[in-house]
Amino acid sequence: MRLAAPVASDRVVKRTVKVNGKRKVVYQRVLAAAPAMPTMGDLAGLNKTDDPLSLASNVALVLDQANSEVLFEKNSNVALPIASITKMMTGLIVVEAKQDMDEILTITDEDVDREKFSSSRLKVGTQMSRASMLHIALMSSENRAASALGRNYPGGKPAFVEAMNAKARELGMSDTHYVDSSGLSKMNVASARDLAKLAMAAYQQPVLRQFSTDPKAIVETSNGRPMQFGTTNHLVASPDWAIGLQKTGFINEAGRCLLMQAVIEGRSVIMVFLDSKGKQSRTADAGRMRKWLEALRPANLVGGGVATTPYSTGM
Image (cartoon, rainbow, N blue to C red; front, side):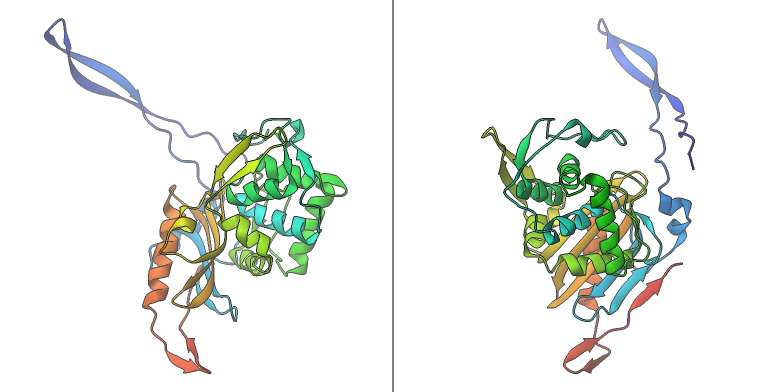
């Protein structure tokens, strides 16, 4: 479905200025900011779902990592665009294929984003190791790096995307479909429940845990020029958080997204937030969720563990 572009209405502002020492009233026409385009979640009516934490995310899911118990869910079965959370599956495919991490890959014109026209610090011709490409794809959400990883898979991008979808089927991610390795397409979709399964699998790979949770890193290019990259998730550097795996994502159709493993009150949990509004809203939702989990009181003790009453809402 093609949406019509929002129409911005302008307004006239009255100002008093000084001209040659004399006050003068002038009128200036100011163009109003265009309203934000609705996300796919908004179009599906998910923004009408209330929850007790007043989350900014249309979709949320929290699982106990040890036993997959659902602690909180909101619209968790709805398949939506997942943006760069796609790159976590990209990383899992690269690692499980046991490709040579020291092999030098080259950014080519094929890796340039002509769908969203996103910027990149990796110019065409940039060369670096597969390990470095994977590192900055996960830590900094580098789209050209993610594209190069897919393109340098046996059989190229088509085979890589097929491997992504095959892995999704293997993990029981029945609401998931991939069309690229970067997540720039709105056709990369998954439900929060599916993404929790992906996080569980990805957490088993130490390199994915390390690369996704590095706050910053310096990577070497083949010409010897070091490049410094930073994380897209400021929580990983916070002493208040113990994060073992994470990936952020954003395109207009998906809103702000976050996939994360963290330890809260001694309990390892998987958190998924999709279609959040506002640049810091997804991490703010994670903070609200952490406080909620910290405040939970055990309903009863079962085998030394804590049984809690989960929260569920949505379609």
